[in-house]
Image 1 (tube, rainbow, N blue to C red):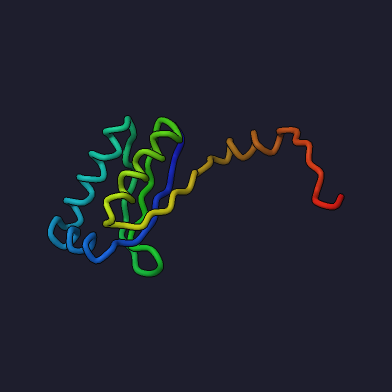
Image 2 (cartoon, rainbow, N blue to C red):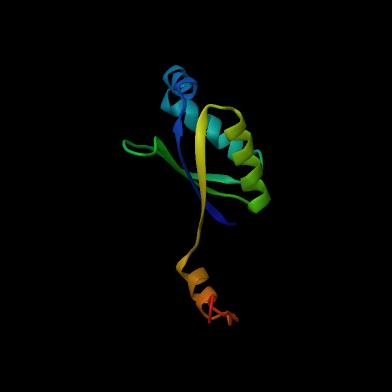
Amino acid sequence: MPKYLWHGTYTVEGLKGVMKDGGTGRRDAIKQLVESVGGKLESLYWAFGNSDFYIVVDLPDAESAVAVAATVISSGAVTLQTTILLTAEQVDTAMKKTVTYRRPGG
């Protein structure tokens, strides 16, 4: 299953929800969200800095990632960024592909 990293920040309303539900309550809600599309929550961490949280999930496909991200973003409780994560073996496979490319002006 493809692996994704989500990170983002809470809005004021989203932070109020975290204060009400606590960390474990939010973790349980995120686990349920991910499992609703056939995925698995691997890890969830809160952080200081540019992002309030980091979440790693396994999802069946990119369409599931888009569906979850759109649902979460449309709640207005968080801003969210999605990153597709690759294994070392996937990078090896990618590096062996033949690609035809002409640089601009070249």
